[in-house]
Amino acid sequence: MRLDDLKPASAPASISLTATSRLPTRYGEYVLHVFQDHQAGVEHIALVLGEITNSSNVLTRVHSECLTGDIFSSQRCDCGEQLAAAQSLIHAAQQGVIIYLRGHEGRGIGITSKILAYGLQDQGLDTVEANIALNLPVDSRQYHAAAEILKQLKVVSIRLLTNNPDKVSALLSSKVVIDSILPIQTSPNAFNQAYLQTKKLKLGHALSLC
Ligand SMILES: Nc1nc2c(ncn2[C@@H]2O[C@H](COP(=O)(O)OP(=O)(O)OP(=O)(O)O)[C@@H](O)[C@H]2O)c(=O)[nH]1
Ligand SMILES: [Zn+2]
Image (cartoon, rainbow, N blue to C red):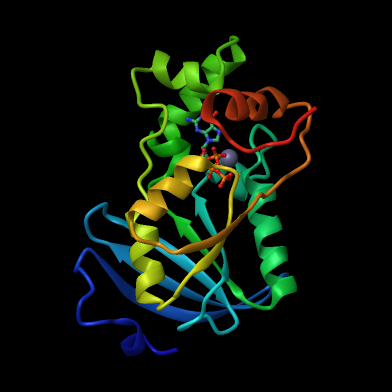
């Protein structure tokens, strides 16, 4: 796929493809596209394996940026493990896409506030209470950029890897066609057990925990 192939005349100017390259990874040889989100002022990533243009049922992970989990292997959350699991599943299927959404750090509150929230969680608040104590929204993420990227990649419909019902609703309201939803389970550890329990109980995530 070339840059020109990805620019339908009808695409809103708010998201545009700015660069593309091969990206060999431990999980296969992907193609990485950078999309500039002019409205949010961030650059999102689409990591594509195999041919997804005009394809249905494409295995898809829409992943919110988590610096601590994705880069530093933090055990306070399950993000890093989920990202690796998604890449591994896509590798096994030999087709799929990971849309890595920037500006989503801390469910939208940013890295400074997330780390402040971690401090409050260390004093006994849960992940939801900590955001509220900082006078910040519990979850301010939006997904229309992901929908627009899927449209520009000409993906017809997806198999979405997620446990988050709000993500499903948001993508559906942005006109993404979801064929099925696949849970993305990770192994809880001593540091993220309470966090996962809160995601399940307060945020409605489809997690099977004991
Ligand atoms: N504010 C805040 N954000 C967190 C915390 N732990 C992880 N995050 C952020 O939460 C986002 C990921 O959201 P999750 O709820 O883990 O998962 P999800 O993407 O909504 O749902 P899945 O598709 O099932 O993974 C990332 O942006 C993380 O930075 C926390 O304790 N507080
Ligand atoms: Zn995380």
